[in-house]
View 1: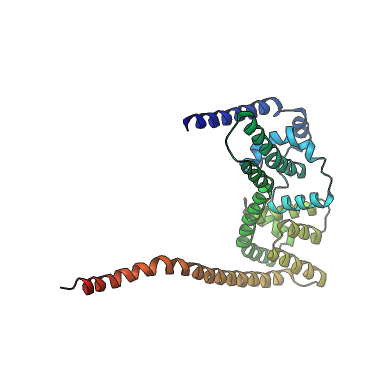
View 2: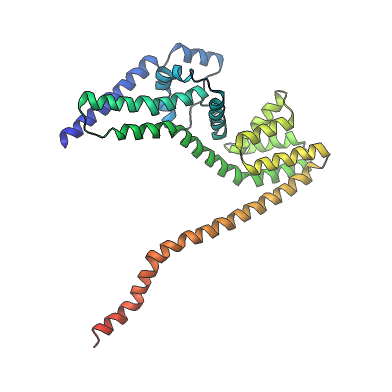
Length: 297
């Protein structure tokens, strides 16, 4: 057993050493310098595993990822990256390269090590790890999307209230967004509104910029908010009045969601209560009676 642990520990250290060598040799290549010089250097990924794997992807799997030309698949990957909020930190080729790295190369390496070093583990393990590795980027993207959804849903009613107050105070819609973005640093919704202002400054219409935000977030409440604003622009309705009505609707929907969550929580508590709490209560209540019945004085 101790020999096996030493062997596996040595393999882990050897693999980490190879990684460090590759990183030291190829981590600062000419491609990276060119991206830095042109201002196209990607941001640091918020996911540590992706950021750690990026050098290996660029040196081992990126050229294979570029050979995948399926437009439908690339559009799906691009949309997944967009809704996860990774568009500034991860490219489509890098995403596919991660799938190849974690889903193909690592399982193949495990299989080679099994036969080369006569390791004793089932071949099902590399296959299972390959499947998990291939779908792991998608699972992390979905997790990031859910976190963004929660943050946006919590902030949206307050943002709409602030927009309504700002427009009533005399600011136009863009000026109201600018004031809110300045006061709400670090918010997902504030970052999205900042992108809306940036798109408008680059020449996009307000309707197009808002619809792009709705597409990036993929949240029904945001889509409804954007549709109401575009309809108000088309009909000439007062934006402040529309924003107030939309805020009330958002708060009502949040109250309904809270009621549903409470109902689900009570149902979820029923089974543990029946399995653990009620038997303990019955024992506490009826155990003295049973003891007195069997061993009565």
